[in-house]
Image (tube, rainbow, N blue to C red):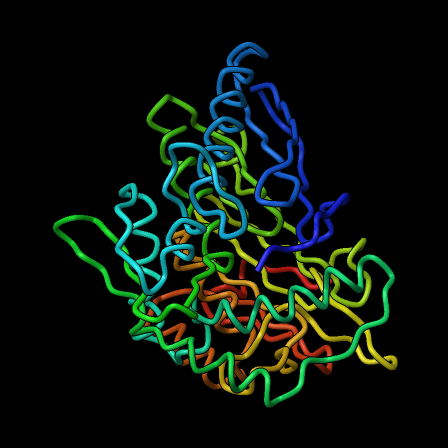
Amino acid sequence: MKKKILFLFSLLFIFGCQANLEKHSESFLSFDTYIEFTSYTNSESEFDEYYKFTKTSFEKYHKLFDAYNNYSKINNVKTINDNAGKKAVVVDDELFNLIEKSKKMYLDTKQKNNIALAPVILEYKKIMDEYEKNKDIKNPSLSKLNKLNKCTNIDNIVLNYNEKSVYLKKACAKIDVGSVAKGYTSSIIARQLEEKGMKSGIINAGGNVVLIGKKDNKKDYSIGIANPNDPSNYKVIIKESNTNIVTSGDYQRYYIIDGIKYNHIIDSDTLKPANINKSVTIILGDGLMADYLSTECFMLDLKDIDVLSKQFSFEYVVIDKNDKITISEGLKDAVEIK
């Protein structure tokens, strides 16, 4: 599901000052959110080179992973969905790998974050779009959701490893990679920037943060996690470097009916918006996994989150629906609670 464009980076705030290198930052719109790119470089011209590459790369991957629009000479997620029940679609390696890894993660976890849940997610997207236009809305009926859910089996996604093609077995099947695409994209671009010589910087893609090296090549970055009840302020500060920090929160996109707030993350078991946590942050070296797991864990209780953290070796910060903050053991020395 696409997330609401954020005009303020309320998810995560970046703190600290540079030492010897020059700090430069620019932002641009992609993946329906603002991407903030920060780099510590020897000159502005060096930064401009990295920034141009980053912006162009995000535009490329946005088109490739888009489930809502078609583009000339690009087989993307929308192309796959348009051909559901008809034929397999040959795709680029990046899209094939994203779908393959997302499917594997689903089978290896608690099976909450399902990229094949798109038919149900699209129903909620319509409601959120109407809500943002200040129109009257109501929740979808359970009977309609159950009917749509018959098209969401992950096994409907058939991968041909020789052809690098994707086929959806049912005509009603669809996929949406919104829960993994930004983390995957940010991580890929960060590695490419390092190959180009960039040593120090940050990509903040609407809550998907990649830390490249150390701040100014010397110190850990300080990353703030937003207070879910007041996203303009931060609740927790994490000191880390050279990793991914990804947050899923109930304040990112939501709608309100009769005074009750419903967030954008749909639980594949209940077919309703998840309501266990307000915010879950995952710290992990792999951007795709961090993005996937932040959504997955948002729908889980603390016990299951802890089990997954041991299985996939990640650290976490959880703010539950009662505003209780829980920090994983390996992260406690690197966290400050405000």
